[in-house]
Image (tube, rainbow, N blue to C red; front, side, top):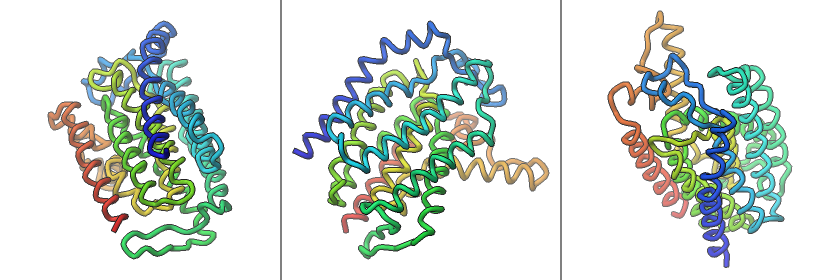
Length: 324
């Protein structure tokens, strides 16, 4: 019965996005809700200017419907949904400002930080005082718990804010964020089976619904994309990724299973640091890392394939590690 719920959530989310897409994308075009590409970004991306954005609304709707059908009364699932929607709203504001004023930058940095830290603090306190999560992390292989005590709160805030921005950074190539996060969520659905706690089946439903929605979204988002998820979608996915890691108490695996997210963030940090500290010298041709590969001549399709393959290897390795 649990497996049936998970598979149905996946299928319903998939079908919903496939049905919504042909209606929603023309609506975005009529409303002139199009992407504005950065002039300093890859020159090949300038032709994407005007492509409909905010398509993340499609898989967010599918996630809400599928999850609320099969896991409507699980507190942890509701928490994960609320955080996902909260960050989707931050992304929506960012996208709206970009579209309204036809610029590549939306919310100011300090505005994003305040909103992100506010939502992250609320989620961290909820998890800390929850009997199902608490302040401890599970350590694989040794099967022990590491209790962080009150330090769990700043740890969780760091995980949420860091993950949200990392997932946002990786959303720069057609189908990249969708593919990587689809694999990540499918792996976490399997991982919740390994954990076998009282929330595992319902959280697996949550992960499967996201995976199904993203698979449907790839129908419209893979190269050449008919629609972009926008910050509405990427920030929502970041919130979801962080919450499944924290609720499963396996956040220690997040940097491995989400290695591609980490690579994007680290590449930006190194690039900015090098530029400021080494007299404007750069490490990469362009950051985040996927743009470096574009500059090296790799096609968007090859970059997505490479990132997806790395994510599969890391996720399978972590599931095997957890099941030892």
